[in-house]
Amino acid sequence: MADAAEAAPAVAVAGLSKRFGTTRALSEVGLTLRAGEVHGLLGHNGSGKSTLIKVLAGYERPDAGTVRVRGQEVPTPVPASVLRDHAIRFVHQTLGLVERLSVAENLWLDDVARGSRRQVSFGAQCRDARAALAEFGLSVDVRRPVAGLSAVEKANLAIVRAVCRRPGDDHEVPTLLVLDEPTAFLPEEDKRVLYGLVERIAARGSAVLFVSHFLEEVLTLCDRVTVLRDGQVTVAEQPTEGMTHEVLVEAIVGTAPGGAPPRPGACTAEVAAEVDGLSTDVLDDVSFTVRAGEIVGVTGLIGSGCDDVLGALFGVAPATGRVRVGGVPVDLRRHAPLRAMRAGIALVPADRNRHGVFRSLSITDNLAATTLRRHRGPLGLSRRGLRGAADTAVRRYAVRPAEPGRPVEQLSGGNAQKVLMAKWLGVAPRLLLLEEPTQGVDVGARRQIEDLVRAAARDGAAVLLSSGDPDQLAALCHRVLVFSGGRVTRSLDDAEVTKKNITRACLLATSSGSDEKPDEKEAS
Image (cartoon, rainbow, N blue to C red; front, side, top):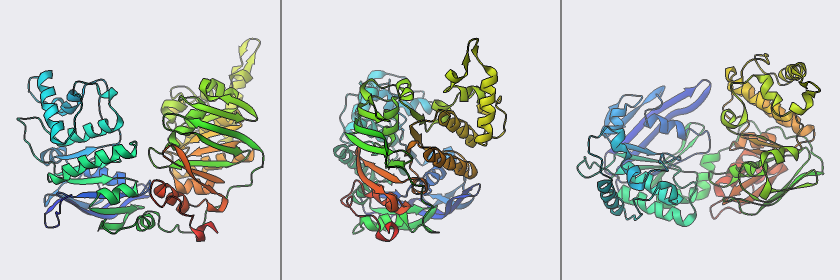
């Protein structure tokens, strides 16, 4: 890491503000990124990190504020020509690699995107790719399809592609490289390899904005750090030397206003679902129970394994282990969604448009997908029965407009989510699996959906709620399981379930402070 204190800022933003409706995403945010430095950007979900990155990328226009590149103010939204001319590059979590193409072809994919007239020679691509990777101390078979690379090899390839150009092109050093959670899915030993690559890039004179949830790596890798909370800067460009995990946690979490949220209702002592030795390629021997009427939260940072639990239990992902639902064993090695449904398990997936609803079909047809057997008669399906059930559900779940014949694709996100909830709650599941149930809905619909979750628990369902929103988990859950490295590292119970404790447990799960007790004042 280079000392660039005297250098002019590579990129500087001042007074950035941005609202989406009534939501304040950014409020007078300032950030200075210097050549030769790695600058960490921290903040929990919804803190404003993604909006800030989108402003830098020209995807969003701020309501107020300025963006300067190498001392010159640029218009907003930032034009593509500024990003190209000043070599401002981004590597997102998805990496943007084409799996079926070779390493060399992926490395020089921008040649095609930029309309290069260079004659395509696979041999020349391979030669230049070997030289480019070697320049950053990397060695990999450049003829190999990207699909066969390890996770860290893919991440390194995406980063090198962002900062290098082929011989004969302009060899400008990128002004800014933005890395958005590049280590989220990497094991610890692979993270150190990637850190070395990032340090090499900074040493060449680029400014690096390193966005992460992991405190340890920010303190290890970054020269300075900025923390956002609720769209505001709580730690402004502070040197990481001498900084502690606790200072960062307090800056990220803050103090929740208005007291604790209402606690969920009481649940029974009856164990409705028992998970024993659940393992996947990410999860490692996970076991827990859920009681009838209990809402158990599942959470953790990106790559922790929390996102894999519900899919494995519903049979949409390969897994081993056993589940008992209502005392009946389910062998996960032979599991599938149809078996899950027969066992009394229902899943409301995070991506409702791809995996949850049939968008082109009517509300009636969507609701009937899980209850067709109820409406079979000697002459086939009873359309009258289907319509009557849909009329009842539309009223009960407050779907608007209340037109069962309307295609789901014509509904708002919140109303489409209510249809999806009604579809699965209509089968009275023993174990209800919810993945980010209020994702992409407005405030009013969010409250209605959360009320539906509480009602399902009151009716006796065991509820497993996977969410990255600590506010929602604190408001709904009796208990929260915090994941890290494919295992449950903390279980917060009853009064321990607060936004601050949940966030703290997630942030400290991979650090030396992972065994720290919940906040005494909030837990009392």
